[in-house]
Length: 115
Image (tube, rainbow, N blue to C red; front, side):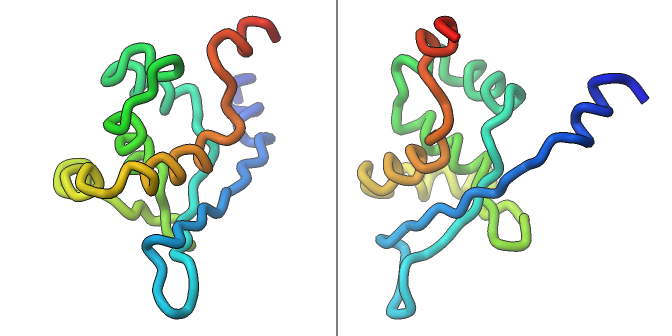
């Protein structure tokens, strides 16, 4: 086994719970789950939304949500084509709140360079 594969097997992936009160019902907030944003995810977002870490758009946030949102069993909640149009119609505060919770551990490019 190569070093990269060995390191991947050691990596502990913590699933984050994201609460969306606006999508909830009488039983409480809607909950979705996401895994950490990876280098691959960042690369995909950068291809579609250049400089998105410094100039994050709603469209980039929607694409992040589509990429990362899962249900409790780990199944993707959204598909790219149809759901993108629906999410783009959502209130900006809702999209921003979800994306911020997903991105909570990421730093700006300047912070990453400093470290």
